[in-house]
Image (cartoon, rainbow, N blue to C red; front, top):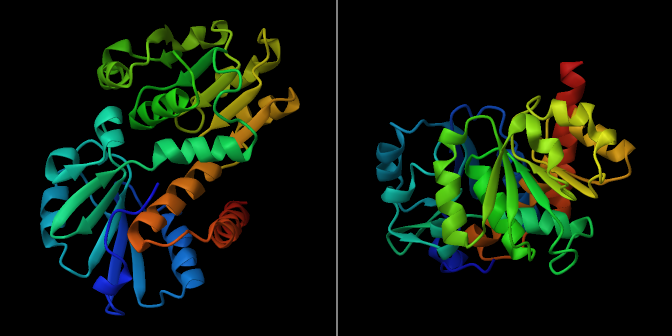
Length: 295
């Protein structure tokens, strides 16, 4: 994803601000990743905070962002709420129906979605690339904003359709709309029938614990899925990831997605290649610290 904003000269060593917004947001790993990137890039005058912000507070917050602000990362529940508050949307944002990144440039608010290319990059890092087994069945667990991004990623990988496991079909209208814009036919299946789709690639976009039932029967699936992507990153490994690894599947974790979508945000905000290795080391160290603290 190429940066489309002016370079760093517009800030010229003045205090530069960025942040992740959401509710709740205290658990976010984004500050660790972004600050590690700034340090590696020598951007010592840049800061990045985690700020609690719900849907009602978002318009006023955006209005308060002055010329010292370069961009925002958005997490739940703001990815869709932000759309009417933006001046320009990247085409992918329109297709997916959500933005997880806001850039402030030329007195405008620009919306991007780095989750979809982040999923593609994370899968590619584990050997799953476009064009290979593009016709094999794929299954997405969940129907929220991340599921929409995952559906777009499947399209970019060459998939032509996907099954979607949902608990409440009536709450999947946003996903249905995204599927139509993406030109990706979908089949909704009850969550308890997810194991009957014959999927070779599973992307779980549901919270920790919600996919445990798939983990319990994973070894009984026919055929056994070749690749499992679980977007949960803490605690890790999840039961689904453990079951998939024991069955010989390629396992991709939520940290991989978080890392690559954050790297793309860094590139958009700074106009420079992201120092992915340094970001990875900082993120894994923080996860190890959190795991030790919780034991």
